[in-house]
Amino acid sequence: MTVDLRMHEQLPDHVALIEWERPPHNHFDCEMLARIADLGRQAQDAGARAIVLASVGKHFCAGGDFGAGGLQASPAEAISAIYAEGKRIFSLEVPLVAAVQGAAVGGGLGLACAADFRVATPSARFQANFGRLGIHQGFATTLTLPRIVGAQQAAYLMYGAHSVRGAEALAIGLVDRLADEGQERQVALALAAEIAASAPLAVRSMRATLRAELRAGLDDAFARECEEQVRLMQTADAAIGIEASLAREQPRFVGE
Image 1 (cartoon, rainbow, N blue to C red):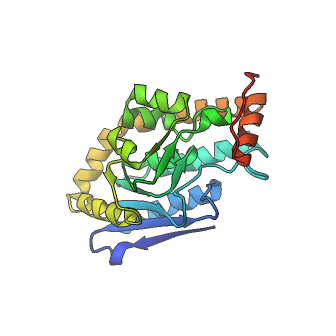
Image 2: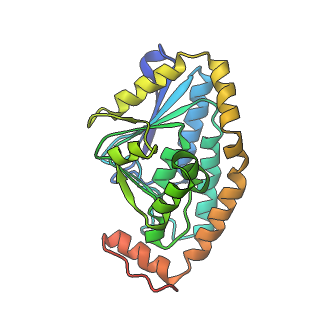
C-alpha cells in the first residue's frame, strides 16, 4: 500500500494532492485512512487551501475489504477503528475534491462523499452496495448521501443498491463536474485551484458553517452505523451477500 502527498507544483495554487494505491481495487483499511487523514492535516498546515483526493489504478476505492483477513475477522474492532479515522478526514478544515475513476462503492462511496466536491468520468460507477452485502450503510453515508442528492434519492440508491454512472451521477447531484476519460484528476485540480483562489480564512469559515450540522451528527451516525453493521454481519443474509459479492454472483437472500 502506498499513500502519498504531493504539493501541486510546489503549491503555486495552494493545492495539495493526496493519492493512494492499494491494488487491485483500492480497498481501504484503518492504516490507509489514517495516512490520508495525517497527510491532509500536514497539507493544510503547510498552506494548502484545497486538497484533491485521488487514487492510482482502475478504481477510486472499492470500500472495505470483506475478504480473508478483512472486516469479517473482527468486525466491531475493525469498523470502529475505520470510523475513527474517517472522522479525522471529515475534521479537515479545507475543502476536499475527490477525483473519481472506476468504482466508488460502499465505503469508497462514503470516502468520496466525505469530500466537498466530486469530479468523475462518464464510466465512473457509484454504488451504495450495502443492501446487497446484507448490512447497514456505513462511512457516514447516513448523513452525507441525503445531503448531496436529497433524502428520496438517497433512499432509492441505498434500498436497491442501485449503481449510477458518471452522467446520471451528475444529473442527480452526486457528481459536480464530469471529466473526459482519464482527465478526472486534472479537472479536480483545476476545481481545487478555483477554490484556493478565494480568501483562505473566509473559505474555512464558510465551510465550517456549511458543514456544522454534518460534523455535529458524525458521532451518532458512526455509532449507529457501526452497531448495526456488526449486528447484521452475524446474519445469514450478510454471509450470503458477502459470499456472493466475492464470487461476483447475484445474492439470494433468505431474510434471516
